[in-house]
Length: 66
Image 1: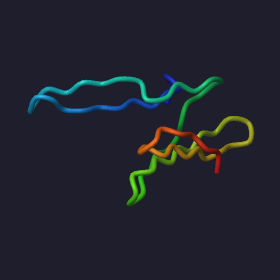
Image 2: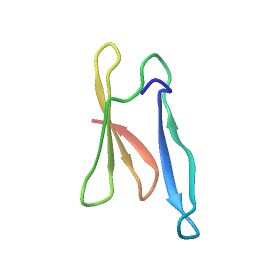
Image 3: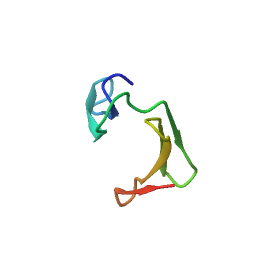
Image 4: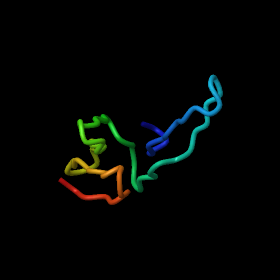
């Protein structure tokens, strides 16, 4: 939360994990919750002044506000 970003991790080869920044937010405190639906879409709850839920369609990497 305090780094204000979402990280992604993958494993290759077995037992070796790599990480990278999936999305960097601007502003203060970072996301407070994450969820993935059965289609692979990532929902990120981000509370700033008004609060919002961002939708990342993982298949095509687009971002929408819900």
